[in-house]
Image (cartoon, rainbow, N blue to C red; front, top):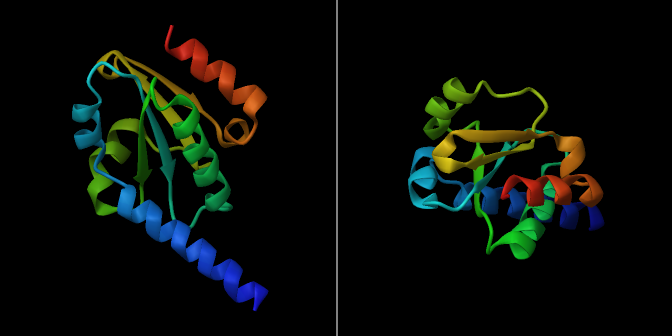
Length: 127
C-alpha cells in the first residue's frame, strides 16, 4: 500500500507539472520587467518531485521578485527553447533571465536543493 501511495504522489506531481508548464516564449512575453526563473525538467529525470517541491517553495518565498515557469523539455512545444539554449544533460536545473533575456544565469541541480547555495544566487541576480 505504501508503494502504491508513493507512486500515486509521484504521478500527481508529474501531472501537475504538465498542467502548469507553458511555452517558454509565452512566459517570457508575460514576464515584463520582472526577472524570470525557469525550472527546466523532464518527466524522466531522477528525483524530479524533490526539485518541483523546492521550486514551489521558491515561488512562495520569492514570488514578489520573480516570475516562475516550469518547462518540460520533453514537450514538443519546447523545441525552440531547446535549440536556443542548448539543454544541459543534468536535468533538472534553473535558468534565470533578466532585462528581456539579455542577462541569464544557470543554476545547477546540486544547488537547487541547497538553500545556502541557492538563496544568495537569487538575491544577487535581482540587484
